Length: 244
Length: 244
Image 1 (cartoon, rainbow over the protein chains, first blue to last red):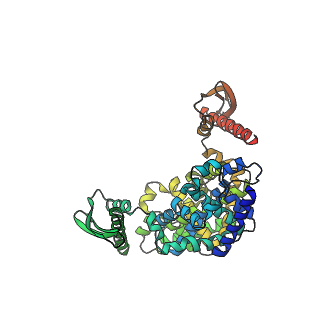
Image 2: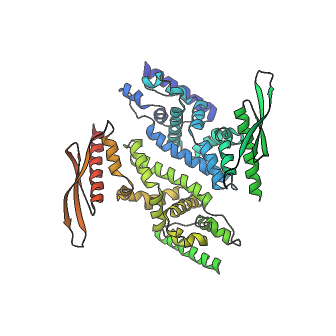
Image 3: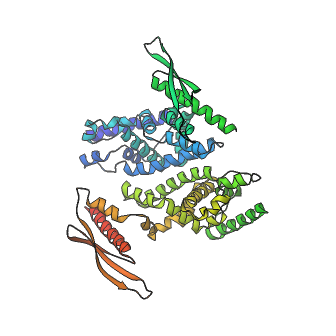
């Protein structure tokens, strides 16, 4: 019974991948392998095949190269520091976990019982591994060009939506930038706090260095407003530095 | 004059790449960029083009994927731990510096004067960057398939020669393996020391755990012999564990 249910679910996933993303697997064993955790196989000795770990090894490298090639060509004027920064924000645990959830891969993982009980199915670290294994399987089955087309649709398009901003620590970046020639006094100060209609509040803060205001920021918490101010300041400073 | 000399040397490199490795660049500006350090451009404002750093960003990722894909296909029975270990030994500073020297890339780098005086031309860290930039340029100019063919010839072939063994710390690996269930006593003991014809000596040592001999090793120093013994022990232990 268990295996039959597993097979039915795989078909659902294949239908979803085909209708939503125009993705097809010639060898569906590879897709299954990408979604199989080691302890599931230990607990089901009758089930053949491998767990996802070799595919994860492959997919990790495929994600790195695909992202680097895309960014290199897309941003011909960026230096390697800026390229590296965005690549790191894109190719990391939380980003990959979000992609696994977006494709509903989490629903199709064959997990060991202990992992299921401990809530592993929703753990970012597992969903990151599963994403890499999925990309490894897609690469083997369909090749680099299909991987690139798919990543353009699901990952690279998010650059323009500002999706990866959330993974960049702008307060640290601003501090690093301002203190490159020695320590300076950086201060965040609350300017206002206004209630919104839906019971939320909106905070406004300014960021100052040596008593001089660099930028302001807004957010639904002081922390979010400070991050917004740091991003505004950092982007103003680094954009004007480029023009010199 | 400077620039003319630069151009002549580039032609020599292109001839060498063609005759030795059957490598050709359609856009030789890319090859030049891969061999140009930032301060050289600062000191020669009349020279157009970029330094190698963007190509290094690209080539780093291309090396990672090319190596991962090769190892994944070449060793279908290896688990991801063993694949990762060999990939790390292959894709690292000393390995890349050795490749830059093998292609004589070090002779063609356009370096800033300060870097030249401080001996940067022979520094492993620079030669690693240059290797990655060279691979980035080759990927852009000739594509993935040419990169793979070239790497099979110059890098992957070295797996069978045991070239990457020197980059693996087998004494640490053996210790880690033996102590996975708690501390054990590991001891290296010299067995013999024989003079060779050419004034060298050959040492033989054995490695023991809890008074039991695991393996012996030989080398031209005690340290080399211990490393050899550790590798023999580690490989015996991990090979027999796989068969279980």
